[in-house]
Length: 339
Image (cartoon, rainbow, N blue to C red):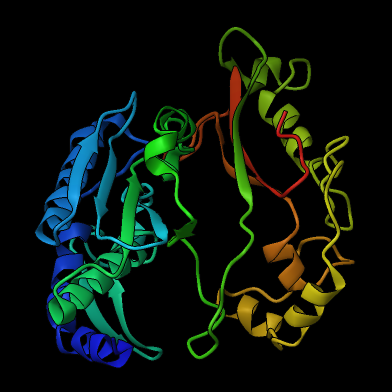
C-alpha cells in the first residue's frame, strides 16, 4: 500500500475537506456555558453522522455534562485510539472579532492561507485531520487503515469533568495499544514533531468578601477594607521577582528536564524574541533561570485569567465593593500534587 497515493487523494479532495470543517466550525459548541448545551449535542451528532459515513460504528454517549463520541472501525493487529475534543472556548470579548466567530472563512494573510473562526485551531481543525485521513485512505483502498477507535469529548475547554469517570466506566472498550492526541501544535511548518508531554490544568475561582454591602468611598474610604485591594495583594504575591510561583510547596515533585531533551530543544534555535514580538511583547516573564521553551513545555505556571469587582461601566462610581473575584489557573507537570 502506497502512502503517496493517499496523500495525493487528500490534496485532490482538500476543498471538500475544508468545507466539512467549516460546517463543523459553524456549530457554537461552547462547553463552559450551559446556554450552548444543545449546540454541543448537535456537534456530537454531526461527528457521529460523519464517522458513520466512513464506515465506523459510531454513537453519542450521554454523560452528566456533554456527550462523548465513540466510534470503532477497521481491523488489524494493533489497536489505535485517536482522541480529540469538539467543544470550544467562549468567544468574548466579541468587539475584538472582525466577524462572527461562528461564521468561519478561509482568508489570505501575510503568513499564508488561514481559517478564521472559533475552533479552527483548537480543536476542530486537528480533530478533522484524523477523519479526513481515514476518508482518503478508504477512498483509495476501500477499508479503514487498521483497527481504530475515535474518542471525542465535549468538555475539554471546561475542565473535562466527565472524562475520567467515562474512561473508568468504559475502560475495556477504550483500551488500545497506543493513544494519539490531536490537540497539540507544531514547532514550525517544516519541522516534524511528536509531542510526548502535556501540562495539566487546575482552575480556581476566588471571592473576597468585605462589608455586607457596597460602600460610598466618601463615607467609608480609609476606614473600611476594600476587597479589591485584598484580592490584588493576594494575586500580586503569586509570583516572586524572578518569575517563580510563590505558592508554598508548589514545586514539590517537579522533575528536571533530562539533559538529552534539553539539548534537542536548544538545537531547535527557537527565536523567543520573535515569538514574543508577534504578540507585542519583548521580555520573557517566567522563571528567569529557565529557557523560554522550558517555560512553555516543561515548567508549571500560575496565571490570573480574570478579575472583577466594583463598578466597571461607563463613567465613574466612587464605590467600595462588598466583593472582589478572580479566576486563577495553574498549568501542572508530572510529579505535582494538584491538592
